[in-house]
Length: 84
Image (cartoon, rainbow, N blue to C red):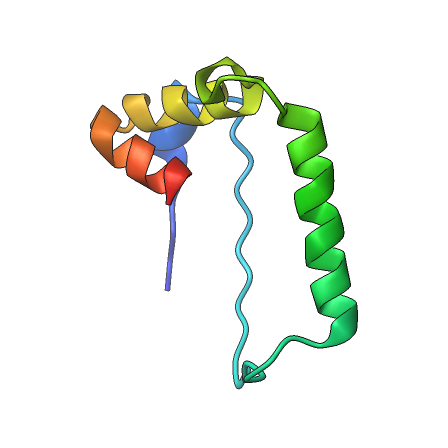
């Protein structure tokens, strides 16, 4: 498989892209206590960091929206992507 990012780089010169190829993975039916704790801590930290902010005012979200707009993806698709 060959991938090229030449067209993206022209419009988004600061873009950084990485690929991860994983094979033969299995997902446990339940989370381990350690993973559950790590997820809870990350959720709490995120809530504390962004509490009271509008989604559109967060710089990282603005960057994503600008990039997706540049790719020609409609605003509704962006909202679905970011809001689940």
